[in-house]
Image (tube, rainbow, N blue to C red):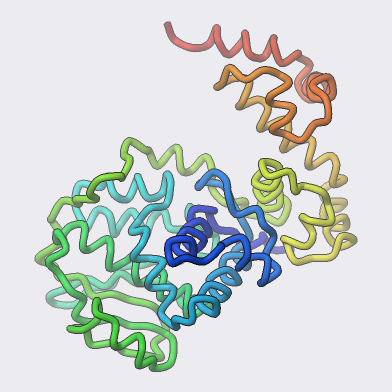
Length: 331
């Protein structure tokens, strides 16, 4: 079975954050659209791509603005957790565009970016998206990236989108000087070559100091079970990791999910145990949280259950694991 299409939770948070800024209850909008209310949490966690598309559609229908996707992107230009920090710490706009192309799949498992060239511009291109709101969102971030290098003195001159013609889209202020071509095979933005060597100026509020190797450690799973583990990890933080909820989130029946796991010699409880163990290892090694606190974070009913499970997976008590990692740290 193919991997589950997934995307970093930061993008979902952009949608809910925009709804809140516009005066709407994000939780109520999500509930009305039948989207599980587990949108809060670490920006680098993974969620199903389908949940994001549904949230963008629900946002557009709630706000009543067909250009909602552009608004969401303008609110959070290149604010994508580790991915965003890596892109915005690039030494030049051209370097940032190349990073987007190289690392795009670290943000969204379905993403494919590339660069094309014309005499006086390069084109930053993204493969067709399944949603008009998502296409707008992607384009808005492309524009925001160029504005970081041009100090907001630039307006797009030529834009490609795959959607049919939209008068509301054409009338957006940011596209006032742009020649927009609709019905194209991809989303694309012309970037003047004169700006390519300019350094990025992300502005206040942007964190830096992230490495591509760090991003690679949290790459999307390349098979069904790998991507399922990442979704379970996200849901565990919100205490929604029962098999019924996970099946609904993934969009497959409980029985089919069990069959796919059985092909890998796994039962669902084994997969949850593996994910809990991975998360517990990180918490015990990198924090001072007590066993009781970690047990609560990982939805164990008692700390003793966590300790017993940890010994099953590692042969060590959590205390022995923590002490071992302390000894490995350089003085």
